[in-house]
Length: 281
Ligand SMILES: NC(=O)c1ccc[n+]([C@@H]2O[C@H](COP(=O)([O-])OP(=O)(O)OC[C@H]3O[C@@H](n4cnc5c(N)ncnc54)[C@H](OP(=O)(O)O)[C@@H]3O)[C@@H](O)[C@H]2O)c1
Image (cartoon, rainbow, N blue to C red; front, side, top):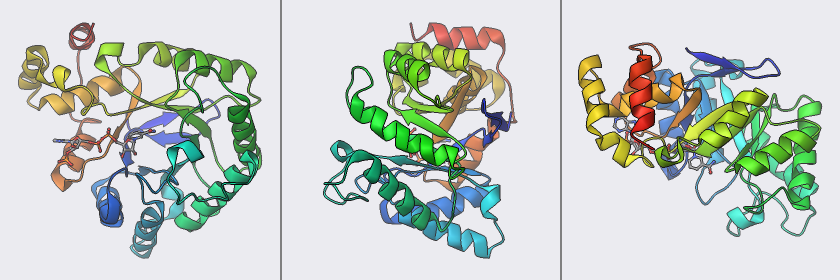
């Protein structure tokens, strides 16, 4: 379970290291994450939460150590004005396709590369439906995909009805979805079901931070005790086994190893999976 393949036949490592909120520690932590075994990095061209340029700094250091660009999976996002502060990576008065192009080219520069593995729309512009603004942005992203400048495109923070609409009407439907995963929402079941039906890879974030109740649940503790691990790893392994590609943002070297260990060290039974699914309903 160390790789996942998209509907257009691109491979994604089965665990992604996320770089949100790492600030000036971003470069050191990306380097540490790759040294620890993470081969996929998630960021965004959005200075409020991410330091994309510092991810690129780590890539330079890693390259000097022999880590080739092609061995890494680099994912970043286009964030619209509403998700940015004044430091946008594009001209705020430009039209949306131009903003996407400026943001994309700036991401390539930050990463010192000429292609991305995955380019994600940070979120639709409204909670309801896919607006004309979203279609304009998506079309510009599709152009980069068609030109081979990104191996896949995706969408984040998306509601089920929005994903259905995008899949129905887009020229290129998303290869990945990246959503916050709440146990109380059946671990985002409605969106995951669409992804499964459409062959879209579902990436889940906040698996630990958004699910403190699940982490405290005695049944999860019992499973962890039986398997010989801790409840956090049980949640990550559960996610993998129900088809979620997890992200972790750990800042700790041992936790990086612990998180990656869930890929190989143990397996949950169908009974375990059902128990974890049921505690959340
Ligand atoms: N698309 C979006 O809008 C969006 C939004 C949020 C996040 N994301 C992405 O998702 C990534 C992950 O975010 P997240 O919210 O899931 O995680 P996160 O906020 O970075 O938090 C992970 C938490 O889990 C702890 N942790 C992880 N592994 C652990 C272990 N083995 N033992 C103990 N504690 C452990 C970490 O603590 P330690 O540091 O002490 O290990 C940290 O407190 C982000 O960096 C970003 O790339 C995307």
